[in-house]
Length: 300
Image 1 (cartoon, one colour):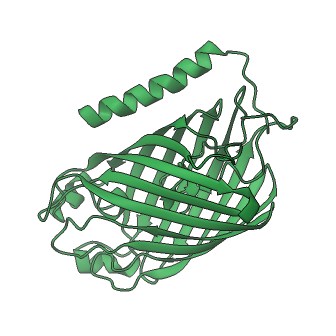
Image 2 (tube, helix red, strand yellow):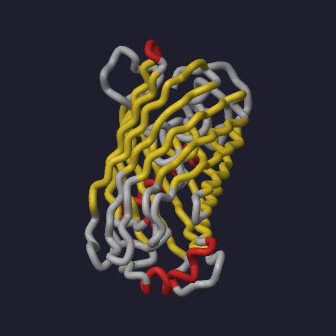
Image 3 (cartoon, helix red, strand yellow):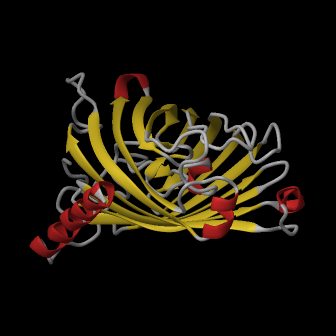
């Protein structure tokens, strides 16, 4: 109940921002790539990790957002993630994502049919607390944001049969992102309180633990120029289910930002062992369409 209250409060801030400024129009008032891409749960980030930046290119007097689609191809599974996010005044972000996890021919090992799919819906909210990733170059303080992601698994009976305690849960996180313009580096660290098994696709909590655990996410990206970035992600995850060990995740990626209206990402990801299948490594692709209108650059 406490975690849901936090999520409702963050959402209320977004609604308040919109109602307080009904004349807000989308713009492209921020630097290229400063809206990041979309992490696997839908918030602005880099594939596996959340960043402190706010989705879209909207300045502090407008809004922006994106629609996103991600597909991860692993040896025994396929993960599809798609949804949309919006940022208001470069201060508050609200996102929705649907995840579909196709078991392929692993289904029979779990007593299921071939190609069985786990699905979950994720509603997220993020608030920028302090700092500005672009303009605070003379400060060591990063941009810092807090957020929450409410996750609802659509396979209630099955995930509980596999040992999960619940089919829904809320992740809480705090992220810090620092852009070093003189070094072309973007550095991010995130602490996440979670009970999620495989991001929540296998439920929440389990026979080994049903307590919140603090997990860490880290990201480092190098900008070759304003259109092209390469980077790495690392994310720790809880190990709550006795029937299958859960490992940390890592990824290396290339992100291309040809314009402020579209971005494309290609990556290699290692999610370790998943549901009795070892060494789940493969490729993923992410595409975003940004919702905004051209305008002059403004201080954000």
